[in-house]
Image (cartoon, rainbow, N blue to C red; front, side, top):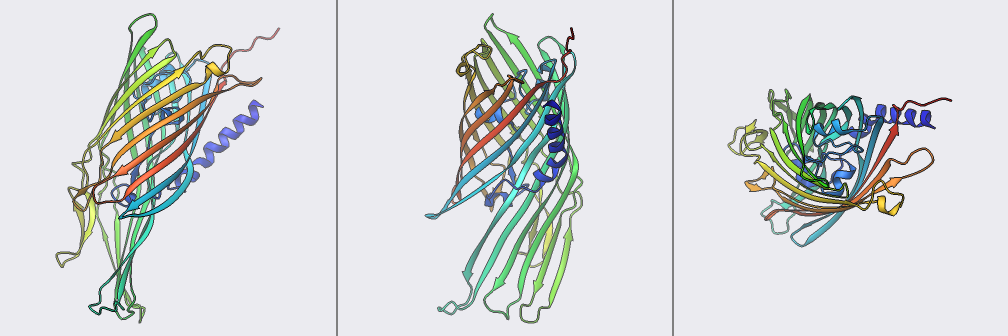
Length: 435
């Protein structure tokens, strides 16, 4: 049984990069701006608490949000966590509504103890998602019959993904440090295809592409203080290094005559145009008797000082150049609660973990001079123990999230997401006695 399970885990880790890279995970038209839609960066148990995790420090979960937490892993455990999600989104603009849905593999992560107070974690996690397709049409003829119209079709796909390896170390009782080093990769492809009902008019289409291959580094710190026999609090802090990605994005502009099929192509590139922001985070988690946990996180992503490539022909001379003012700093606040009646007791129902959470985030995109959508979210979930003759430490984490993105004069999005995370907790390092 153990050999079969280990082979399955190894096989999943081998094919996962291709699976993750092949999925966009979004249908949002907002993903056409900047790096796309920023992902949760959390695992199954975090999502029940709406993403709270900077101060979360437990022995039986992989907490990617703060690598310092890896040092809390049990001495004889190997933890493997895989998550999937399904999402239904309603888009609303000017009284018109449209529904879309998608489902994808969200993450794969693992954690084990390498030495006393020293844990090692690794896995795969998305960073951004790009996925949209829509069109708009308008009349351009002065003829009231409107025989001449033009249509622009907008589409995009791709996103950025990270394969990470990290460690957490507790050099002194109550104080832990950690770091995640990630290989960041992915492609982002966008296009605006132009067409006219009059074949005598030349069309102008633009194709944008970028291929990212670089690194990402995240640091974490946690300090745990015991307030009383039944209460302790963990304070957490995180920092992500901002830096250039060494990516040379390309813009290909094609002018085509539909009648003669003659086309003219101009290619623009910008050297080293993409950049990651510095990210600062802080949070806490209060633990009462290992039954009630209450936490809150705050993160600041410093996007405002980052420029992004844009194609512009309004001045008469086409240019593809870096433009400032495309982003703004993003602030995000999450709060969450977890309750379990008796995680070590004999009653199965008392071992179930109940979680709720809520959050608010400001936009990081500026769209045609208007701030992008603010984000409001709430969540609820369960941590259901998996017990059988082989194992009684694994957990099935299930949660539902409602997410609303809303911006003045722009599209409103309401999404309902189901998150399912399965945490395998195996005793790989136990010493067996033979009589």
